[in-house]
Length: 103
Image: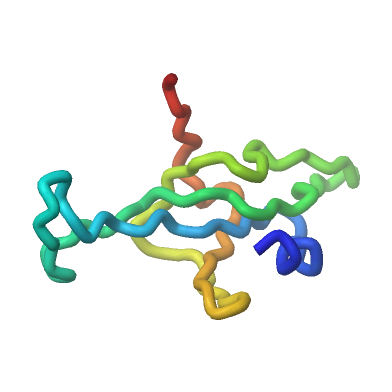
């Protein structure tokens, strides 16, 4: 996976994410049918652009980093495929928030 993202870097304030795969089994081992699976709105950031420019030409850095877990809107983003895997490109303003993993 890392080789693909050395060749691809999103432009400006765009962020490339990989959606979290929904659970297909319960903790007890029961398979969940596709229709009953909830749509997962979480993703992992795999690449980020340099940031957006304002009218004076200053670059504003993107607020998320590679590896962050983010919350996405239900709809939106541009689907792209690299090496038979699906990824989505969102603008920074479309990301709803960053999920903090508590340990």
